[in-house]
Image: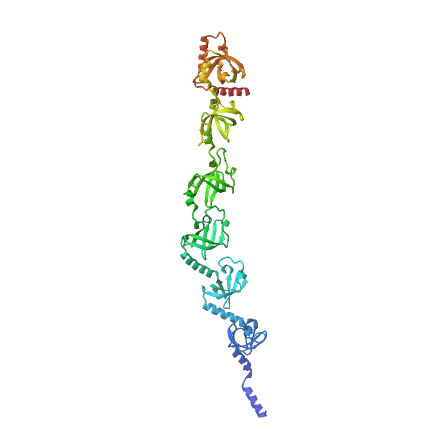
Length: 580
């Protein structure tokens, strides 16, 4: 350069202040940066494909790099492909724009999904993987959350069974701020089921037979899936017979045919029947099992008052304890029969309306009381052994465990018997007379005294006033002593007739077992009393003395007085005095 030219340049430099001018590179850089905003999606093109990724030109001074993992189909990507990327940074530490293809996909997918689908929309999604509490679902590139409770109608035992499968789901909630979507598959299933249930219920009618599958078994019945509607088959409608639990007849998964008993359209409830497919056995029970016929069956239940016998499925009869034996007193049905035992019984009565049949075991044999009534007419004599005794009588075995009772009033013609032990003892053989037989009430009355002639029938021939008699003292009372005479007749020696002298106590003068001689001073056929007197037994005793003695005796014992009863009272009093 010539000096002249250098001089001109120096002058120009002095005229323009170059320190205030921005470099061209800086101007170009500022202009380029103004077209790019971090956090935005920018169009680009693949300019180079490498093993681990691709260089993408976005119109910046430098290309950006996108890793191969961010491409949905890396193998199909090629140079020249137009792609949209997300600008994370204008320049990173390598002075290159930081780009993300995955974030661009996600943002565009979010905008597309949320723009096209509002809350309540139905979309398709692929179950990607499990997370805590549910499953992540891919909905057109957007990850949505499917809670575990919303996967299916019933409980889900294994979520892995759903992974990789595509299902329709319903959008429940979209959170724009958190970019979060919650979906449900259960709601779609329930809506579909409701529509199906409603349609199915409209097709159902009472009395219709439907096929179904046992879904669940409880103590009170079975739930059956009728193809979208669950019906309840109650245990009482499963069988005409007796069952204790529904599992005895059905199992889960079993296919069954049931009959519609009732439909509640408002509550969508269906009542089902199984036994109703066959005729009610009680309808023909009176024809099949007439009164008096013999039936065979199995004992299915035992109660204290009787046993239930199953004659056929759904038909049971009761054998009451009173109908189990003619002669034995049965207190518990279990003493005669046991559950599961096969028995024969006679039909006694049928009440079809109340579904009750009365049965009897003993009726298979003829009533032994009727047999005895024919064998032993009233007045017949029998021989038997005293089996047991009560305060009012003794029971004598006649035959076949049948007892007859001898009341104390029928034990003696001549004595007042207060307790049967005065005459009889258990195990003793006795002869008695049949007084009465009542087969219906199962009672036989026996008489001990009737087996002998009544001595009082000829008492006037046996004893007359003034006769001297001998006997043995059988009982001592406060008012006198009883003396056993011949013919088992007792006479009473009143205390006033023991001696001419005053007697304070009978026991001071007489003892049980003493032999005495006395004179008959009174014979009372109505009261069946014979009055005796020891003091009148003297030879010098005159007719006048005899009359006086009789008056004393009669005055002491008024007609109708119970001498023996009173004597027992006085005896008890004397015994108490002696104990003191």
